Image (cartoon, rainbow, N blue to C red):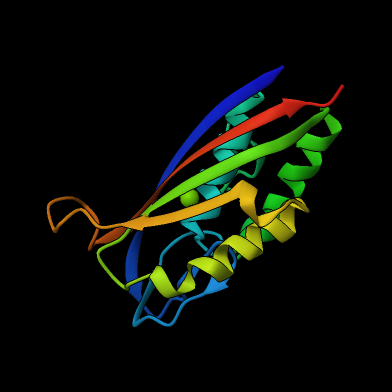
Amino acid sequence: MVRIGTGYDVHRLVPERKLILCGIEIPSELGLLGHSDADVAVHALMDAILGAMALGDIGKLFPDSDPAYEGANSMKLLSEVISLMNSRGFSLCNLDLTIIAERPKLARYIPAMRESLAAAFGCDISQVSVKATTEEGLGLAGAGIGCQAAVLLESVR
Ligand code: MG
């Protein structure tokens, strides 16, 4: 059995915050605002994994009202979601992320982002796709960064 899941998230860009995407710190004058490290790509990805298993979303799993998640490293939260995925008998077929950002330019960081996610899953880098696009100045990107995620999980039981 295979199960598909999708996720979507947006965070606002503000001064004096780090910009972290897929666990990689990206040089930028602005960073993403959020209760955790605001890694918008990992948040969308976790929602896609949870969605594929019909287990709700990260807001349910890691409430932002809980001080335990203040400044949380989203890659650590991803490890918890991957453990949950494994405990339910699923493994990753592939994932595909589209990061929506007017700035900064992300192309040169994409190989590191893919490696970071492949290491978290313990999978081959060919199973991990990360893409970046702009909204040609027409959308919300500019004020923030968004990400769409799709995953396909396979039941290994
Ligand atoms: Mg988020």
